[in-house]
Image (cartoon, rainbow, N blue to C red):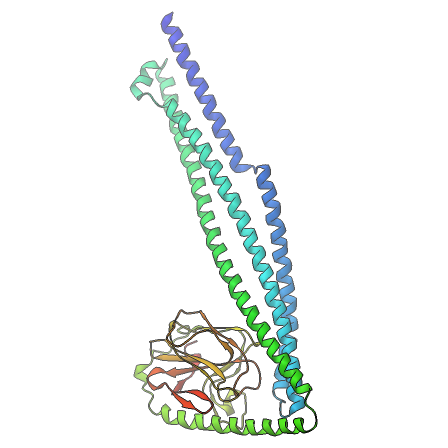
Length: 426
């Protein structure tokens, strides 16, 4: 009789523990499959942010179409700037284009801020979910420990039959398997959390870059507006003096350009192909988006006839002023120059230490200094129309490094060297 009471108490204890364990498992499953009221609120916030992101994307698409129309007008006016009136018209077109680009950048910033908010909310939700999951797992582990505290032999001796013993052992095995599955789910949550955190850091980097880009575009726009207003204010004799100065500047620009071509023709003879990397698309990355408006080679073949020179030593990429320009490959900044209204205007040259040196010209703002180590894709400046330029664009020259040099001139530091076709490496 006493033995039966002991067995009854043991059986009741097992039933209580199994009930507690089943409750824990059921509660844990419910937690994973059904959001709590807090999660529902977070989901609503995330959905609102997603709608904001979609709305900003649609707005950017509309503004980009508007910017294309202004870019066409800028390109048209750039070919006509032969006098004061044409110069004023070009500046007005550039200001309109820059204004739209600023709106695009501002909208992009708001979209990125919404994306960061969405990721932050998602990170908070996952962290809370992981914490609750850990608490549930602790309860399951404790329940398993209480059921399986005795050795298998003791369980066999206590069991009413071999069948009951087998059932208990299988139940513990099933519970351990369920525990492993829950642990796997928890691991997936942690991986997703890490991915969200990485994405959030990337978005924060994009946000800072966009803010810098916005500042540059705003500054360039103010410069254009100041020049536009100054030209509008010219009257009488001042107009005539401007027209005379404009013609003189054009004459000097042509002379300098012809001199550059003459010097580089001589340097071209020093080019040693064995010191260059093999031509391979992708060796250099495109420094910016946009279309190629003039190719490399004789101007009769590049699609741009120019009386000032007969050979184009790089490629031109049509982009709006203030567009970020990125390094085509890792390297070291070899030189930074400013030729004012002549030659390349503001430019940056990078030695990639593979036989190639790239030069980015007509910038509105350089963003690096000589000697700086550069990573592939790092912003090194912003596009503009400084120097001998008919409008905003990027001029990219690829030099053979063993021929590259710079010379001090009255208009600034001048880059020279034997060039190769950039399209062989882009």
